[in-house]
Image (cartoon, rainbow, N blue to C red; front, side):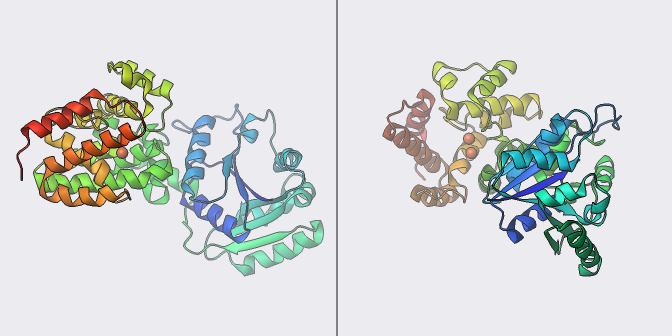
Length: 400
Ligand SMILES: [Fe+2]
Ligand SMILES: [Fe+2]
């Protein structure tokens, strides 16, 4: 197995790191990638608003998920956990013990590569791993790499691959932190990592979570979920916005409801329950044990308490899994946008996409029926609010 090892302070991880990791994984045909945030010695005084070790670890976890690689990408805390001085040769010895038969490749930027011979125990590193250096800018091409490559392979017998990354983001973490403190920086970051920084008020950002712009709210919301759910959430937002324009609801409110509707989708059952308890949300017996129903309740709690959303937005999120009798316009829009958004590939989704243009109640009714059929098909109990919602529409809706 070919394993890439990419260390750094990741303070914060930015698009340059991500482009480098993806290119190296492809060029080397890696089978696995390990991301290793460096430890910061406890005695080192950090500037106010700096990320803690745990926060850098979490941001690196977001980066791992957002790379979109088909191979496993793991984040290891072994350098953060190490007491005393920490050197790359120590890390490689530990990894060699875990992976005795595998081919290890150490990924590094130009600066590190050009000073490699000054590192601690370069001969040990070169014996345990191949070196993969990537140019950070267009200037870091062959002319710069070739003499060092020849020197290191002669002196240490190092195996070396160098690559220059076109379109690579030309910004250092220091510059990005400065930009963040001045209200910018998002162009250099994956939106989820920017959102994580905003919600944790890192690096001098001072976001008031109850006053976020739509793009900030989107980023913070995305930082709470896994990469694979983001297309669904963006699809729901655009569908809800379109429906709001079509049916006369407030488009911004529809967008906000969609952005946050699944933000707690990856909470564990225990996290769902404690979130609901924290925000005073009462649950019925069925909700208490049904994970797919719970996320709408916990997300509504967070939407209100953390993000200061309006009652309309909160209730749209609250009812988006079960529906209820006599739904508000925004509740209907979110309920059905969640089903009709473009990444839904079921045959009924196409039918819903047509109905939302012409007959909103018919679309909601169809959505409720699909839920009822689907749940019954699995032999699971149907939530009473869903049956009430359907019966109410059957009794009250006007035929288009
Ligand atoms: Fe949901
Ligand atoms: Fe959803």
